[in-house]
Image (tube, rainbow, N blue to C red; front, side, top):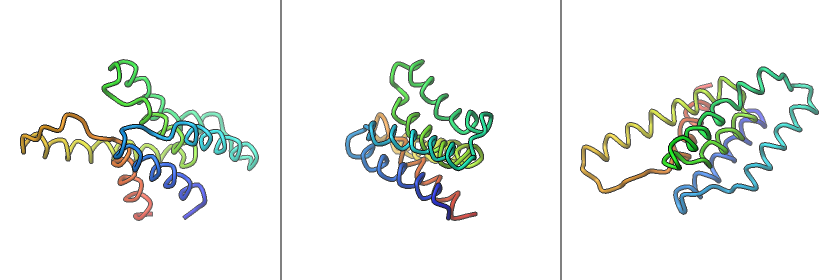
Length: 138
């Protein structure tokens, strides 16, 4: 695995634990990781405007959904996805976002069928699970 893959996993892993425990993310470290990823891309000559925009698009869309749903979707989830997207690139973050949504939908379905009283579930752990599945299959 590349350094960028490990960095994305660390971003997702740390925030997944925090999301499970407190339903929040590590905002400042996650934003710092996004900024560091951007600087790293510029320094290494890998910054391509189109590729960069595509890599941050899933996170930005999730942040817009958070605003549109008045917080039913977590804004922090979008920030985490944005930071991971900067490090992983578009194909990887698209898989992580879609995989995380499908995994969380499956768990939500089980919770509905079992008539659980759980009203919400943390999203970042599902993004982490999707990232691990993606990276283990490469």
